[in-house]
Image 1: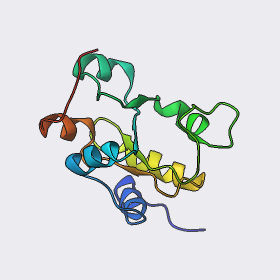
Image 2 (image 1 turned 135 degrees about the horizontal axis):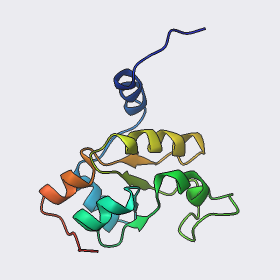
Image 3 (image 1 turned 180 degrees about the vertical axis):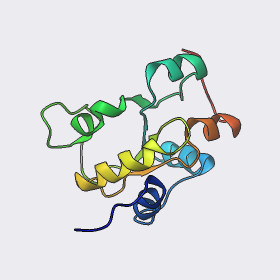
Image 4 (image 1 turned 90 degrees about the vertical axis):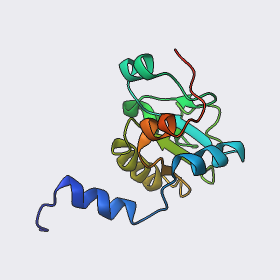
Length: 129
């Protein structure tokens, strides 16, 4: 049995497996066809607003909605080759979510470094709820 690791080490290991995007890179990726997926819970979306065009899928439904072979998938979940950028509030839960999407075969899944707060502080578009 392997020795337990802490969350910081787990995040480091997970993040080593793919390239994370900063806010400007995520914006450019969305303009080029990547799917932005906002996994923040409702209270944060109501407090801080939404990214125009981002698909809102709360974290507990993410895998069910984005599995291209799943019976509960969203219309946008068309292929395992889909580029997905997961966005949480500050860029922690989104890393775990991206790893889960990789496990489902969504090999181009990534997340936004710094999360929604990074997007907003970069001056990128946000709309109130």
